[in-house]
Image 1 (cartoon, rainbow, N blue to C red):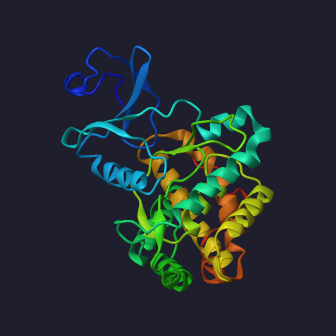
Image 2: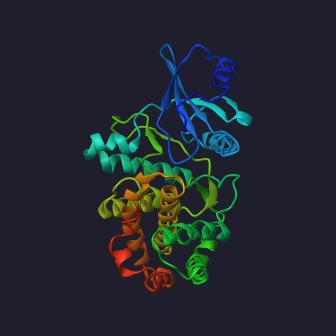
Image 3: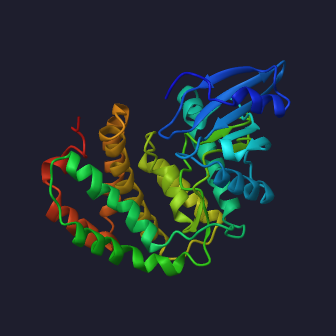
Length: 330
């Protein structure tokens, strides 16, 4: 992305009442979105630029408004010009969960418990006016593994049996995600802001990057949080947080199996996405994250209810690739 300011930014800020503000560009992510911190005296705000045609800020505005209505801590919208991709939002500060825990590792259990509490709160709310996380979506996502990782790794696989195995594995959970909950889909330590990190009870946690929300299974965002692609989460912490969630929500006897199903699905998708980010977009840094994601995927595949997909991996992915956890690309 260019370091230049987006066209139209000054006019938007003037119309929003921030015409004399100082603009500070912030590091970007894996998308076309760009972020700027806007300062005016002691006041600050965040400017998101989600430029069409690559981005559309309207889903962010839609989901954010709904989350606020449910009492969850999405950033307040100060001003927006959706057709140009500009959204001026509340500034949640710099204490991103992942970064803060690097400096305060002893607080890990407390901070994760509060993040799980926020999910439990979300899961007591109505599911939200969002599209369903249906089989077509699950399969489209998991095909990223065969469409991107496998060619990058130089292996030819049976794509038809891949889809069939996943459909067999995922079909049982579809009925259990009715009527469903709002699934934020990227609920992890880089997308949670600690608004009061030193608060003894964990303080408020601000939500960002929720524009792709769907209605789906309540295990999905737990997988996002506890099998984080960008941060090591120990199996011990994962088990403790699943137990904490179960103390808040009646999970039912199939929850562990569904958690493994969605863990394997999400992790296979992410491996494909990271391969695509490297191969298509030239973003080398994502390759280093693949082994962490693959390790979690292998744990999920060990669940007996994942046997059809595990058998597909046995038949299609060479042992040396699995042994190095998908590493070695590039």
